[in-house]
Length: 297
Image (tube, rainbow, N blue to C red; front, side, top):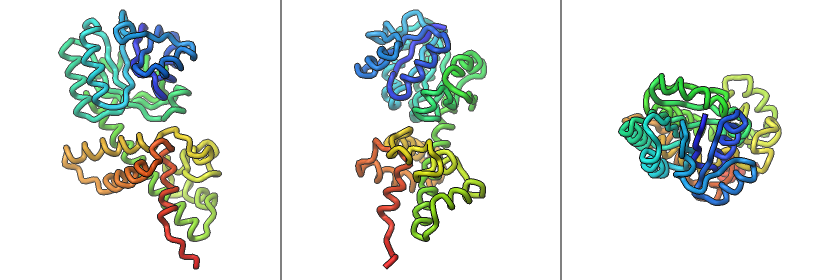
């Protein structure tokens, strides 16, 4: 399969590498020269222009920061590729922009999917991402073998934009649950309960969740979690803030009442704007700890 891949950042770069390892003919492109240089150093073919990257491709994938970037790139793509070229956006963006991208593709008779991912940079590198895919079943069937080169779980979530809907809902759960886990560990510290003891109980009891058992926000219990590596990001707090903003925009537009989602957004905004946007989102436990009162005296 001849594939063009637009967006070679922290997520896109490893994803392109996995496509190449799977034997696909991949050409990448990014407007950031440093990302292109890194991809070339990793042995990947990188085009000098968008036009060059997508020339002769059967499929084009995009992994970009926000909806405005996706719409800008797709508005160019639909004039560059022939009818029938499959367009897949793997970015996490607002549902309105996702819908507009699908409409652009349909107007040029190009099948399209929205396919945001979960799994962070480690999942991108290891090829174990989860893809949440929105689009027609027959288009999903065509794309699934390609996505399997980059992910472990490829889930069809429904029609156009439903991949974005699933991602927004999932990450709202994640943001809320990480705050809850952080609060529980800070409370345990105040009560004199060892972090390992709390983990040993909650991880096999009703408090278990991914934020605890896979991504525990305190050093020790889960050696691979960012807490053991200075909260170097697998998923940065600034990205969590972006996703929580998307969830609340969707909640307002749809009429859903999400008070915990609103609270999580407020806390991650405070945390990110306090200088922690580039730290892992699990480091929010440090803000919770800093705001707690010492009553031992």
